[in-house]
Length: 311
Image 1 (cartoon, one colour):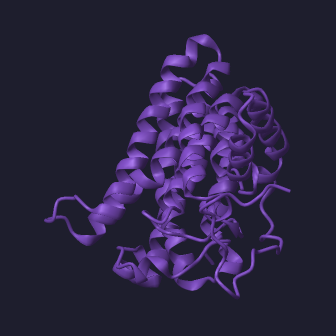
Image 2: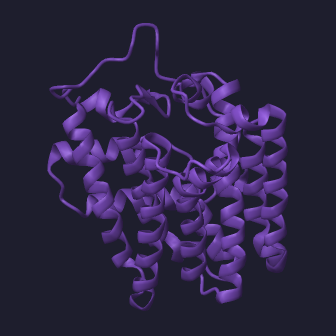
Image 3: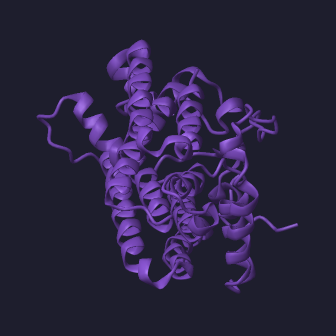
């Protein structure tokens, strides 16, 4: 058992980690998970991190989550005619960046969250200093993970990861600290924030998977359109869950965005309007896949699942 680090916090009275089984996911989401998790674990095994850092990284990276981004990379590779296994370096890198972003986003200086994936957040469990350092490590290790990709693809993959990561951080700045053009409408501000904060890594996952699957420019363009649509849809559904669900369903605290005065899609569009936008984006995502035929069916199933999870 790992000792609780200095500076660690305990969960507020009456809040317990969630242990219920989440809603059943489609086969497209479940079938690549064993290979993805094994790849993530093997990469961390190979690094020889100090014990405390190794423990913190494993807790943040391997302690739950649906692996949506590496799964999207996997099926994007399949959609263009490649093998899902070929996309694992991209999936590993994207998941490391995602895990880093969650750890830092949960910190007291940011969203100050106690729960993530139904468990205490890393800074609650292991202290703020370790959470900061583990996040730093995962960001650096993400780029190292790409070195396992074929050499000819490394430059393009690195560029995609860099663009997606930078956009995600900029979106977090706009969401937390502001800075967008004050003349923009609230709806335009929301879209600008979340196409970056949430959508950029999802877009990158689709593009990087398509690259490793051997897709041409037209195929990568189709995957880009798909990724942009479901990236924004993902955030709108998160906003709906924050309004309508409780922490036992989401694995994290709900209602915090409204309490913090943040712009949300239900707050700007209303719940019905937000649901309508989710449906529109789902149709847009599936339309982008028609060129792939049956090879794109898993991505279509994932779009439908991501659309339904808010209902």
